[in-house]
Length: 114
Image (tube, rainbow, N blue to C red; front, side):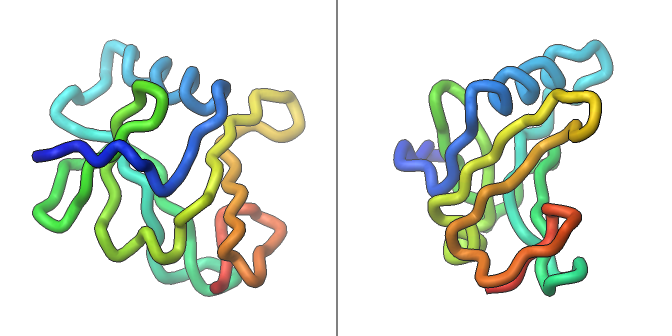
């Protein structure tokens, strides 16, 4: 499958480092790819998806600063311009999503409305 170089989402250096760390774990399934997407649900209507998954027929492959990821073609509408960050602090630890398309977000940081 062809890689599209203009990625609709970006990752901070700390997010790239954390994803690569996870991919280097002994238990990592090398047959999977990093998936970025959305699904219905959550307190604001939609929830972000970030995880490792098998590539599907309707996925597009992107690359951002050496990090390859897949995304369903229809999800770009909701995610275009979003930045994914990794917070490694004691109080807030995990991936965060800065989405300029979100009209409403909630306190959990993983749910939004458009």
